[in-house]
Image (cartoon, rainbow, N blue to C red; front, side, top):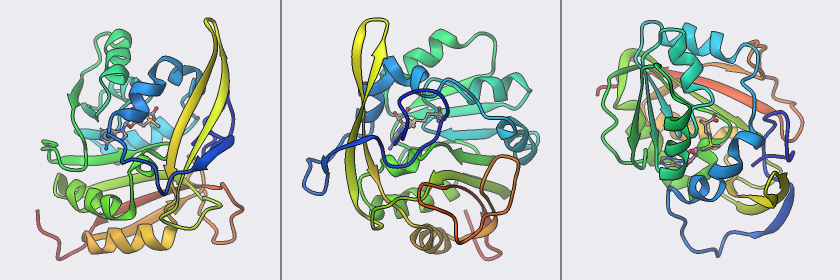
Length: 246
Ligand SMILES: C[S@@+](CC[C@H](N)C(=O)[O-])C[C@H]1O[C@@H](n2cnc3c(N)ncnc32)[C@H](O)[C@@H]1O
């Protein structure tokens, strides 16, 4: 998922491809987080400029739901701004890190698979950052995830997805690993990322009753261009179509 072993949260399919994951065993929803929790904050140490402003603006009074909240990199500072945040994650190790970092921020966590769990709500904003939805095992699960998530939106709510263009065909899953130098020696950041092209993303969103509202290429809300280079970031904001019902 990360193209770099440290520093900025540039994403896409990762450093050294270990092997194609087409034939890999199905992965548990918490596998990525449990495997990488100890090094996650080293991989993604920062919150990019503009990200919190955009989420705060979209969330309004909230509440907001983060799909795959991880260690709370974004949920905690967003909550500090006064937005009530619920964070769902399937990894006990990731949530343990979040709980260690949490002070008085009103972030409620839920240990669950966001594809089929009761997510509560309704929410003014549901968001998935840094290619979290590319951790899903296949396009069918991605489609189910969008249909499921939209049921927990307020009628005027927004679903935001941040991801990156892949060099692989949509539906292809690739396993990668990046060596990381840690205080305790060398570790490996490991990820199996599902390529989802924007045609499929919009198609499945449409089938879920969601309409593309805006698409940006960065957190300054610069418009997306279709001729973007490989690995370019895209941030999509969907809203309920006029005929959608909860
Ligand atoms: C790339 S991390 C992103 C963490 C956080 N959102 C951030 O921006 O730093 C993806 C997170 O999603 C979680 N995750 C992946 N698939 C999941 C699923 N199906 N249900 C719940 N959590 C999931 C992982 O455990 C991990 O914590």
